[in-house]
Image 1 (cartoon, rainbow, N blue to C red):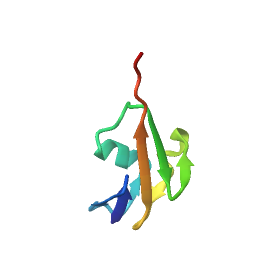
Image 2 (image 1 turned 135 degrees about the vertical axis):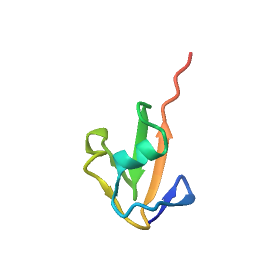
Image 3 (image 1 turned 135 degrees about the horizontal axis):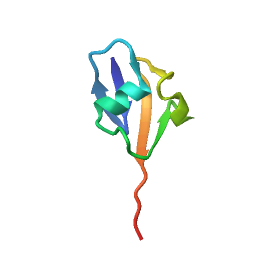
Length: 67
């Protein structure tokens, strides 16, 4: 499966990959993230249910705190 993440193509072996699986694979579990799939925001509550498909385009941004 080929997915574009933040403008860079990435290849994954898995045929079935959810947004939650991807977050775990990228070692981003527990971080405050916003994920957009093909132009639409994926709510955190839908990470597990949202299946990725070959050719999907994702934008992943993380919240940065500071003061």
